[in-house]
Image 1 (cartoon, rainbow, N blue to C red):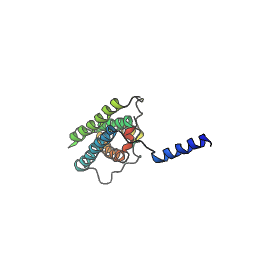
Image 2 (cartoon, rainbow, N blue to C red; image 1 turned 45 degrees about the vertical axis):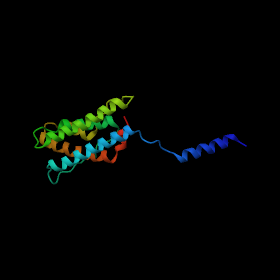
Image 3 (cartoon, helix red, strand yellow; image 1 turned 180 degrees about the vertical axis):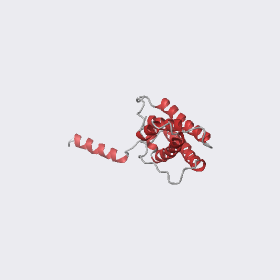
Image 4 (cartoon, rainbow, N blue to C red; image 1 turned 90 degrees about the vertical axis):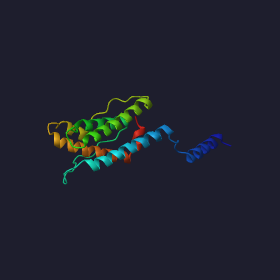
Length: 161
């Protein structure tokens, strides 16, 4: 009897029985907290931000590429939202809390620190037009909401450092 064939057969059997390891409790807890914070922020954005009716976002949404890019995008948009907008102080605080939580998670659980990601195109475009405070602020709020909805659909990106 060929033992190599028996070993190969048993290996295939084992692979077909279990294809993924269960997520550690810490990861599940982190994802749950980020999900709750993002959902609350989307609700607050819907309730507190008045966007002109015909306002649309032309470039596609920013990319999700792990926790460091999520942190970069949220911090970038938060810096573009003027404090003068009505009801925006709590939104800015919530964005800061979410990015702070992600930052702390990344520092404590990512052994290899990736280089700081490049600023994505849509955010970079807004940053180059800072002189138009009102317009840039409204678009930044809309993009935060769009980005949070994308994050909520792709929570697995939180597992990538």
